[in-house]
Amino acid sequence: MAPLGALAWEPTKTVEFIVPAGTGGGADQMARMIQGIIQKNNLMNQSLVVINKSGGAGAEGFLDVKGSANNPHKIIISLSNLFTTPLATGVPFKWDDMTPVSMLALDEFVLWVNAKAPYDDVKGFLAAMAAAPADAPFKMGGTGSKQEDQIITAAIEQKTGKKFIYVPYKGGGDVAAQLVGGHVTASVNNPIEAVSQWRAGELKPLCVFDEQRLPYKEPVTAKMSWGDIPTCKEAGLDIEYLMLRGIFMPPKATKEQVEYFVNLFKKVRETPEWKEFMQKGAFNTTALTGPEYTAWLGKAAATHKTLMENAGFVAK
Image 1 (cartoon, rainbow, N blue to C red):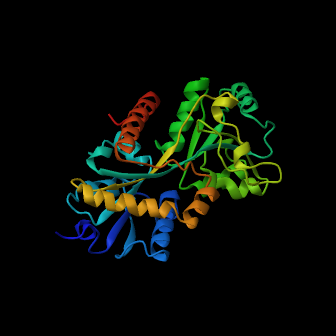
Image 2 (cartoon, rainbow, N blue to C red):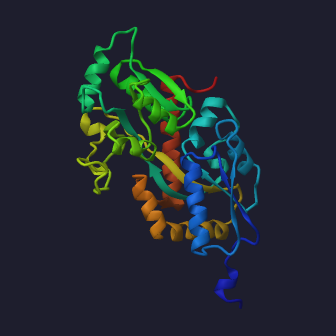
Image 3 (cartoon, helix red, strand yellow):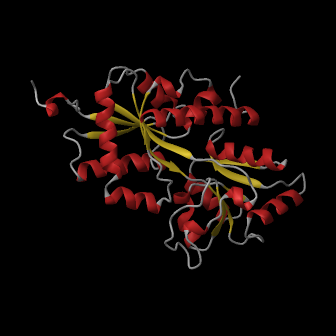
């Protein structure tokens, strides 16, 4: 009988790590961080190469993986465009066309305003929004159209009965700069996309769209840590939204192939480099695999469908 180690599957050639988004964004940064951790700590015998396939709001990357059945040398990092792109475009793809491997983390969203805004909390923001004249509504800056930022914006509109002018930009850095410049009233940027402006005293956070406060207590400014930001729900805006950072394989991956990558990413999450990355980006560090991950995906898909239908974002 062969030893147990010889029965386990592992890659026999370079693994392609698909990013269904452009270079420099959150998913790309995470993929390249993972690539570096794996290389530095010798976690794979084969190479891992990051490939960006951002066409069609990520559809290019997802369709590539969907069409690569029985190819265990290809993985993809997902974000919430896993759900939003098919709904918004009608592209023939859904999340269970791929094989779920592991949830790495969840990315947070924060309601940001200019530091000079005359309010310091959600109550003041909502009061000012309600008082804004119909011909001069608040402007919400966000990344892309019919994606996460605009979905949260639509959810705020549905909760308050007030309308924003939604202004899409190419990336979170642009959004933060426009908010600092006073060209928009607010944004729902990820923590990592606005932290430098917060630290510089140019922006201030009003709430985080999670069910609980962030666990990070290290000061970011002279007065506040991430953990000091109230949840939007406790601040009076009952909305929760988190963005997936997860790994999938093509269809028909075997149990052994999935287990290899589950174990690989478990090792990645145990490294000090990963833990530092999680703290710097103020991520929710929830990690799931197996049936729990699949169940979470099914629930998230249904939530996105409802949010996007209510906002009128679903392709006819």
